[in-house]
Amino acid sequence: MQSAAGARQESGAPNVRAPRLLRAILLGIAFSVPFHLLLVGVLALIPILRPVATEPEFKVFDVVLAAPTPLERPAEPSTQSADDMPALESSGTAEPVSAEAMPLPTQGSPVPIESGFGTGTGMGAGGGDGFGGGGGGGTTFFGVQGTGRRVAFIVDKSGSMSRGNRMDRARAEVTAAVWGLPDYAKACVLFYDTTIISPPGFDAFTRLRGASRDDFVAFLAGMRPSGDTSPIGAFRRAFGQGERPDLVYFLSDGEINPEEVDAILALNASGRPAVIHCIALGSDAGKVQLQRVAAVSGGSFTFVPEGPQ
Image (cartoon, rainbow, N blue to C red; front, top):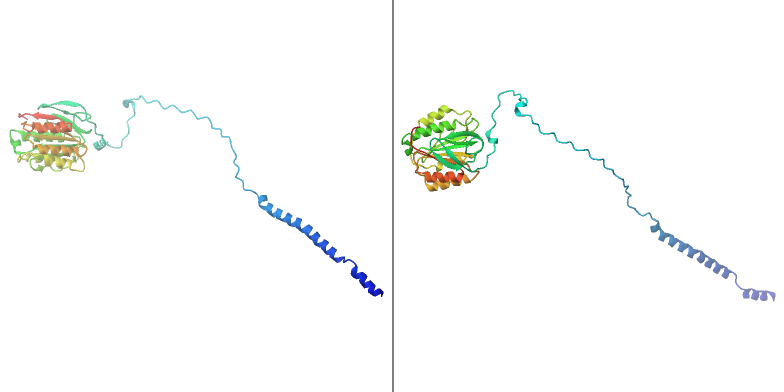
């Protein structure tokens, strides 16, 4: 009887294991929730706690500029004259300065030209001594003085030049003018009718240095007048070379075709123009044409009457 009652008593008693298990679970949850919240918070703070890159710092220095050094006054120009200066020593004979390096002067105002043979008026463009072309060697042709680095002589040898002593005078004047240039100047000598002939070596611009005057004179002595007056070929030769003249002496004793005058002026204007001094020898038949060439080119016109040489 007791065993049955004891069994009922045990079955009606409360179970103590269930509350203990529940408390353990609640306690685990109580510890787990704050732990996980703390862990989430720590993980969230990691990006914030990372060091932030900062720009490099620059140090500022105070720079003090030194006071500028006073400029020295330029040396006063020497008043010592060329005569007081010591002469430069030279190991040999000095060569003349090449006329190629000399600048050409600009044209000036009208200058009256007088000679023993005639008179004329032109635009002098020369520098130094005399009238005419650029700086360089000076010479005189039928009383017309000029200077130039490259001088062309364009001289009539047509049939009419056989009258009187025109050809002899032209020979003598050309020889004196060419060989009156300094030996570093260049000359081109062209005798024309309807053709062109030149002394040996003078069909192009040639330095007088080393040229033979005897050959020059001998050639002119054997030259005989012939043909008609046509200077355009000689002008084309003079202006068609690698170097142009800066001074031209143009002599004629006859009338010149106006179309040739136009062509002459066009040739002169096609590059750096030359000063053209025009001479009418023994006849003024070509006076109008020669005066036009002289006026346009800044040269002079001179009439040389018949007469003794």
